[in-house]
Amino acid sequence: MEDPLILRAKAGSDEAFSRLVADNQQAVRAFLRRLCAVPDDADDLAQEAFVTAWSQLHKLRDGVSFRTFVCGIAYRKALNDRRRFARSAGRDTEWYGLQDQHLMSTADTRLTVQAALQTLPLDQRAALSLCVAADYSHSEAAVILSLPLGTIKSHIQKGRDKLNALLGVKS
Amino acid sequence: MSDDPLKALLMADPVAAVPAQDLSFVTEVMKRAEQRRLIEGLAWVALSFVCVTAVLFALMPYLTPVLTDIAPAFQPVVIVLTIVGLVFVALDQSQRYFKAYGFGL
Image (cartoon, rainbow over all chains, first blue to last red; front, side, top):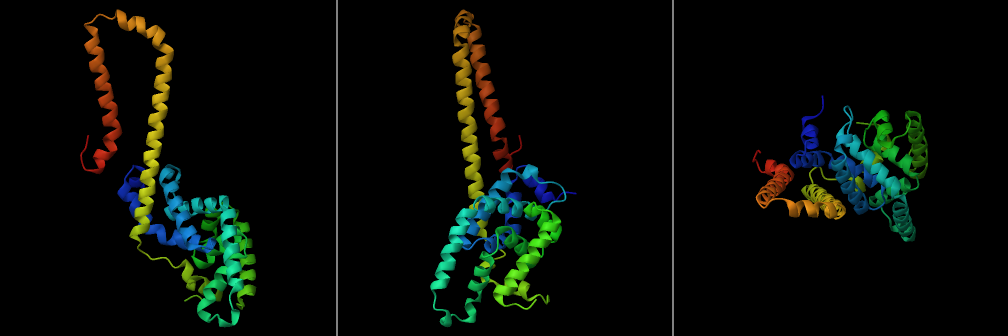
């Protein structure tokens, strides 16, 4: 049975849709912030994804959560806009490389994590963001990324291996 | 607690930390949705106007003699029907907004 909030949103209720946005914005934005090097780009993309979801709510199938639906839209937008993301990643990696490394404390580990994530192809980065950082199941990630289940598992394994090597994490 | 060190690193990344409640984000999304609704509405109105104008332009050579031949008594009826039709269309389009403010039609 479909969520009554989604049913009301499909019927045109702005209040119901704003509740859906409020309930799911954290997960969607966190996913996108791991895809994009710049948080502002990620939040902008998240807003566009929610607006597109609003106009395409009729396409939301039974059994698919609203969060999964929006993340799928957001991922497709990220794919279409990957040139902008590549420029942002290059800018930040270049900035990071100019920093005096011995002055960087452990507090700057976040830049290392972000820089390491940006070295992964977008699909691997997305699979890791969903299944490792965010507890989505492999089948949910397959729906979001429109990829076969086997490909998702392969991306996660390859992404893990690369990140573990870059970050010095013992697997 | 998970013993996956990579998971712990990713989850601890403050760049991906987003507040659970963010009213400004929700407001911005709804604002963009309303803007898109307005633009789509205007696009439909413009398209309808162009189509009706094109149809009238094509039909006017045939309609004009008919209209001028209509007995003067029928002209008020035509005007009233036109006004009723326009009011009906306006009410139909506004129905959603009335519902949002609690007025059922």
